[in-house]
Amino acid sequence: MMKFAVPLFSVVILAATSLGSAAHATDAAQMEANKKTVVDFYEKGLNQKDFEAASKYFGPQYIQHNPTAPDGPQGFKGLVDLLRSKFPNSHSEIKRVFADGDYVILHVHNVREPGTRGSAIVDIFRLDQGKIVEHWDVRQDVPEQAANPNTMF
Amino acid sequence: MMKFAVPLFSVVILAATSLGSAAHATDAAQMEANKKTVVDFYEKGLNQKDFEAASKYFGPQYIQHNPTAPDGPQGFKGLVDLLRSKFPNSHSEIKRVFADGDYVILHVHNVREPGTRGSAIVDIFRLDQGKIVEHWDVRQDVPEQAANPNTMF
Image (tube, rainbow over all chains, first blue to last red; front, side, top):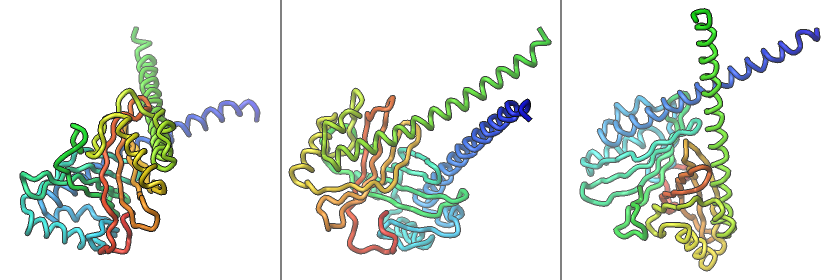
């Protein structure tokens, strides 16, 4: 038995290394896919204001943490409807996109009325099997004055 | 020459694969280290309110995008001093920590006065060679009423 011990051990190590690399590659690919999903969801829903086009990205549930919106896709539809009716020129510029595990994070400058300073927003989305299933956000109006010259973005 | 072509090619492929894995591993290790750095910076600076202890994590510059704070470590010291003098019981609970490339993102519940609802905050830090060099944030008060039962966290 002993003469196989070292080679077998090496094979196990090699196999484990290969599996590890494959898992990393899959994770990285899934995170990139998740970024694209969230960016397209955001563009379709909040800029094109097309709820149907955006809703294809929802998973079987959509847990909402934005305190102004009810749970579920219908809560998001309420926001899209509000933008269409009250702020048809509202535009959200995605400044940064991050992904970590099942989460995608967007740093966004939203201007509801062109010519106004708008708001800084961070949206956090959780995905499950590539579908959007949960959302948190934080919004702050961009102030007129700032103590540094760097803008909020 | 030809009899070395295939083995040489294989060696190059193997070397490239190993380098790729090593680079991934380094990235992952650096991102984990960055998370620890930012969490400890946050704990020391904003919970222990110890500017000196936090300041060891600053790089050669600290570009500030929070509109209420001046650029540089001294701007951050102003916030720590404010907390020490006006809100000594202020506590920031880190709910989620994300990392992507050179960035670390924190989702935080800050309560300046115990017993109040406090604020939801997302902080974004950029690191360079493991040191904190840039910061953005967005802050929103937790409202009394919400349209869903999920809280802002």
